[in-house]
Amino acid sequence: MRKFTPKFAIVAAAIAAVAVPVAAHHSTAMFEWGKAKPLENMTVVRWEWTNPHTFLYAKDADGNQWAFEGMSPNHLVRYGWSKRSLKPGDKIDMTYYPLRDGRRGGFDVTVQFADGSGLNQFGEAGSRTAAAN
Image (cartoon, rainbow, N blue to C red):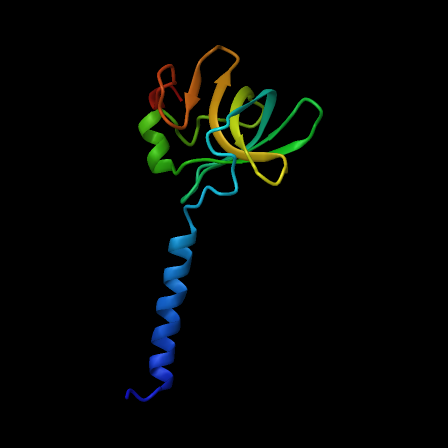
């Protein structure tokens, strides 16, 4: 039988601490995944180009604050997005997968600009190119 030592306990705790966040990180259970809803006349407040996920903060026409998670920069750059894709003050229409708990926010799916061009987190046709941003 193995004797329990403080060194063994430290190693076991370190392995457990690393394993749990990795497994929990990529859940989409908090979103109504696949049930895109439109939002019109939004104003970009802040665009965070961060790993492991991007974040878009915007206000609606009534001044309500919204927060949207997005795919990683590594993923988005393949579909025409960049850290300069959105700027504070930009007027956009968008689609998103809402949060299940009813808070104002969700997962950003598409963004459409006043000039008619747009970006899609999943890379469908009609998106801007990274070079244009």
